[in-house]
Image (cartoon, rainbow, N blue to C red; front, side, top):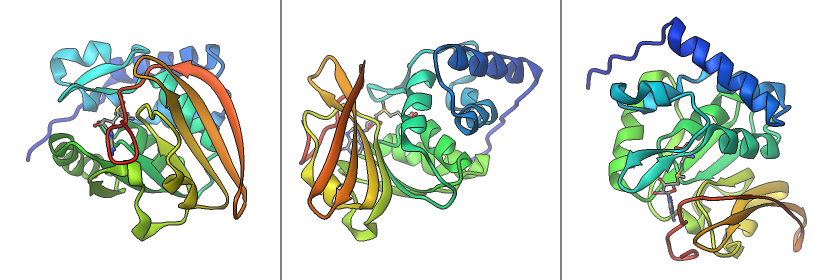
Length: 218
Ligand code: SAM
């Protein structure tokens, strides 16, 4: 497939303004801000909508799904405290934008999407952009046991509860970041595995995600 991606001064300028905006909203992690400043978010949009790409809004990407709001991506990325070489499982690839941010932060990313059309798009677009995660198609609510344990797990869809299976796929000292709530709003929850059967849970701000649909979810 021939993609024509252009990243000119207009998009770069808009991206810099987005970074400043995210800083003003409280995002402090310099590496996360740098990653947001680097990944061309307009590549995930049809050219007709490039003027929407650097607004701090979620946007439809087809099949009833959205590319997450930049603030949400930055917020979850900051919570993950990504270290170079971290093995991260991302549940809900969507457009792949969050995946690119994690890769820019130096992680090895295992990403899973349940919708085939989105999966088919990201497996073409991301490598074209130079990003190479491990792609999976299927129900991520069960994690991916085959490649566990992970340093970090990030869930980018709203879960009704924390699936036990995800906790079991964390390394000791590993961290899960997952939005948990009802269909309308979810609290961002972080869970740190401090022992074999010992977990520290913190509830943070309220967000609105599309639902995590699957065997261990809605
Ligand atoms: N962070 C993504 C981005 O930047 O584009 C947006 C993710 S979107 C808000 C949530 C994604 O999770 C959707 O693409 C949806 O199809 C996917 N999803 C929902 N339930 C899932 C499941 N059980 N396994 C894998 N993906 C799932």
